Image (tube, rainbow, N blue to C red; front, side):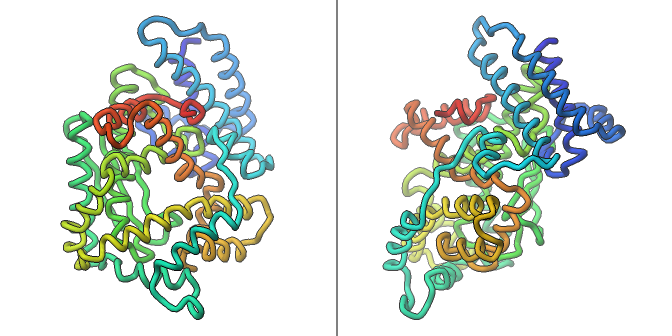
Length: 412
């Protein structure tokens, strides 16, 4: 079998798993006949599992890469191997195999998140307590933070103009450094009743559908976060570049499908999060929001500095979500305790905490891809010289990463 034969069979296996797991195929823009084939004949799980093993054996027999593209070809071989191993692990989980949170994340995402205890988060909470207004003796810190943040909510009737301005600026800054195909675009929809805050559905042909969940208040920082993460230079750009460089230019079928529960997701989420910092380094984000987004949202620009001091500390609590998911999914705490943990250590309101637990129940150890992914991507880019004081080099390394089939283990 050639590498393209193996890759084609891999794509068809991903589509076959998608017939058993509706969340598995995040995007597919290959031949429609392959999708129709998968839908017409639902392959048994054991057959899928056996085929994955046969493809892994065929990969092991492939000759070592050589020539001017040897590095990229090596990455391709490693990528297909690890993606197939993750597919087999997902099939095992769907068949009832039990794994701990860390075993699952390693099997699916090629990474294990660090473990933090209560003391780690308590130190951050103490700093926030000294910064937030309100009576510390009578009001829980989570309520003080929520009241503070409600002063920075984007009114529903201003969501469109604020997001449009954020998207336009993220796109402008990204296109200064990344060449994108003519006609690339995405559509934004506002939706409700979802376990996530936003989602990018890549449709192929350099086009995405981005959905923003409006179940809960949307605060001003989410405009840039979502515009970058879901759009430029995040998920939309990531998928556009893979389609352009790997599918169209090289003819690699495997890049035409995105299996959600796979190592690719850590790269996708990690680069989407770190892309915010790449696009708005240092004080540039606060400056833009103060000058453009705060007025559009009807908020006081003079309050921007304080808001982002609080946000910077709150961001340090992100791993509390991993801890809640790990303990809940490993059976150490129940659902109510997971909500309480998030309220206490992630300072998430009850409504947001309940939404977050629904995310754990549906997507499980996927949660590590956001914060651990961001940390691994940041370290990788900076280790190669893409530091904040070298913005052009940072953009170049970042662009190379989102244009190649690199694995999480390859970031270390």
